[in-house]
Image 1 (cartoon, rainbow, N blue to C red):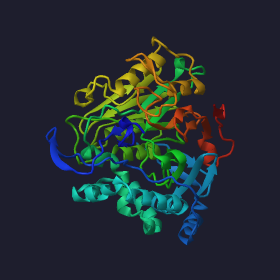
Image 2 (cartoon, rainbow, N blue to C red; image 1 turned 120 degrees about the vertical axis):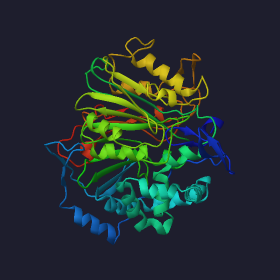
Image 3 (spheres, rainbow, N blue to C red; image 1 turned 180 degrees about the vertical axis):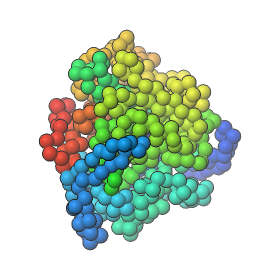
Amino acid sequence: MNEQAQGKKPCCRQNNVGMGFEVGVVGGREVIVGCLGLFVGLVACTGGSGHGNDALNDVVDRNETALDIVQDTANDHDTQEVWRSNFEPGVERRGRFLILRLKGTPFEMGIQHGTFMREEIREGSAFIDQSQLALLEPLAEAYGFLDDAKAQSYPAIIEECRGMAQVVSDVGWTFERCLALAYGDVILEWLQNGDLSSQSCSQFIVTRGATVSGTMLHGRNLDWDKIDFMLKYPTLIVRHPEGRIPYVVVGFPGNVAPYNGMNAAGISAATNEANSKDDIDRIGRSDVQLLNEVLATATSLADAKALIEGTDHMTATIMVVADGRSDSGAVFEMTATHLSQRDLSSDGVVFATNHFIGAETAPHGYVEKPDASTFSRFARLKELIAPDGAATLYGQFDPPTAVRVLRDHHNPLTGQDVPTDQFDGGGTIANNGCIYSIVFAPKQRVLWIAAGEVPVPMNPYVGFSLDELLGLENPALPSPPEIP
């Protein structure tokens, strides 16, 4: 692991490593500086599958007759859509991937999650206890973040953590631990320290004239760190929450608040971390938890926009939302009190890295280094995706071409190509500490995922169908089934 890669938080914040801490003032607010190098949101993905127990069997029995769920859409539309699934909760191994299926109320899904992932969660808890991450809970409690999380987390998040704790608290996965990790984006925004110029997530949406078939594609590289648990055991978490839209999350065992996913209404969405020099607060919602609400309730870009605009934000985040059914998409840039929306261009493209572009949010963003990775990756996306880009692939996009972008290892600011086997550094799209690389086709509800050994984007992209994961008849299947 290189020095630049150490201590990053999920998507895509670098934090300096240090065991001591002190209180300082940044932008008029108190923060804890020099605190710790946390991998917030991490729970283990080490091997084995869980085994059922009586509590889980009761949940399965109650859900056997609840396969068809009627969903009232997020904005109280006059019509209703029926969201179906036909699966029993359980865990499956498919190649290098675990597939965890959950159904019912959030509390019931928490029981299922904890039961089926018991051994992975046991090892994850042991890892936390042996790492600097063990400091997260006492610091969060000492500075009131656990109280904040209990008061301000979405009910679905709280209840899934409660359900998990009921069956796995004896192996170290307590309610407080689960909730602190699910609230980690907020906690680390306040415990952050050091220059954040190495944030490294990338996303793009292409559609219409940008693509071969006119069909939307949404590409996404998730940056984190070289964490063996997550690299070895990537997990697709398929949720059908009672009364809500079924969806799939690309994550890991214990992942309650998602960083990327796609729902049965043809919405794909993911977050990139950002930083604000002067506009965060502690009243409102976690934006990573908000992504879970988008996936569980939004049937359109308009629904997602209403959710985002109607939410009291706390931290700096970028969320990219693609709507396959309406062929629309946007980048939402958020701070505590400012919001910018960058829609698909008339050419059918939009992209984002980790700095703000929008008029409302750009004055409140903060990236210290002029040669930061976020700028080089943004410039490279423009070269590859914009119709007038220096190396444009406009008009050629299909799933393999989207993968070609996610694997790109050229830095346009330095003119250098970074070796493809380098995990992190160099300011390129691919060499960014990537742990999951994903192409969504939200209209067809299919996706391709690269995971496993580093460098992750150089691995095959394995195709999955959301309809097939939900157990529906005649599912649309990914074509090609795998991108080598």
